[in-house]
Length: 400
Image (cartoon, rainbow, N blue to C red; front, side, top):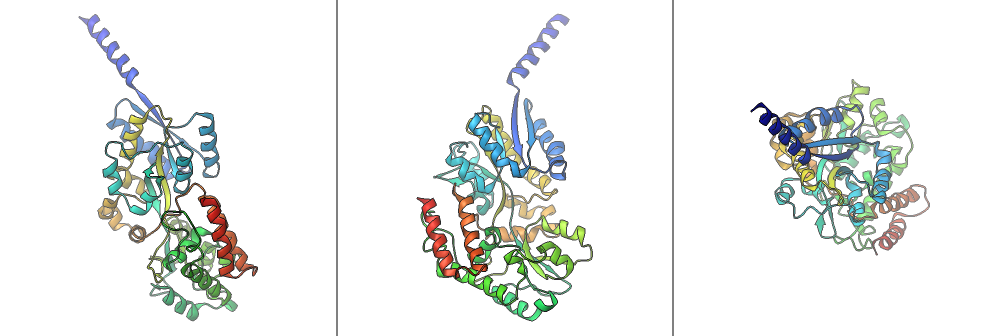
């Protein structure tokens, strides 16, 4: 009898071993950070406990090296099953044929319908979804509440406040746009009614150089030249965080990572959050964050899909939120952790109208074109209309 039990145990072990799967998950959570520790010590163990036989091997990489690492892996045919990928890379890798289209996976529609539309849109390319949002962020206004009692809610109110409080001679500016980069410029363009391209992403002419886009950039340049906003727009002066800490800047625009870093360094600063000032088209900020994508050559697609579903569960989303990762599921708006959080609520409200950057394989080059155009304006080489006309024509070439 004992012999039969031993044989049965051995057989069960062999069956378990034969069905065991290890899925690889590449990510850029900072090494040793709270987010990586939570992933490794809480989230993955919980998934493995709920899914016996599936092991998750998480491998972290520095962000700066990650895109090239992924390109090399794809070219060499040795890819991970899943990747936490910067949202601006998804169309590029989907266009290369590297990613698995997820539309037809069981349960996809429910996940799609439960996330914020802005982050979701970053996964859409060529008629399908090649990932799902994993964590998200956007920019809101951060302001020194000891000086600004009522934050401006519109462009006009911001201009009036800046006219009252900015004093370049005393090195005080009411607002800092942290740099002439698309990440910071696009909320101004969108809120003013401008755009980069048409909705079908076929042309930039008539959109990037539309009256609304030109007017938005002209407004920022005008404020900069009049000394109403900080010289950070032209990459000079103190950085936005340092300027807030030094009392030179009274407000800025930034993501949810800014508050803990700034207040840790400048503990006396009374920093508060508010929605991005609204222009004629409303208060429209920009979507940042990461998506979770599956590589098309994954040999473990069924197990990998289970991990995708788990990472979008309310438990996993709220657990990672405790490390600074803003959830992407709409039900999180009602979770007590989010409701009682000192500033997540402002970001989540802003995300309801935030827009993604152009989901196109050439977006990185499009971004460079926009930034170069604005920098030539700030250097006095071109007028805004002329610079955006040229930029639109350059972007059109990338969209052909």
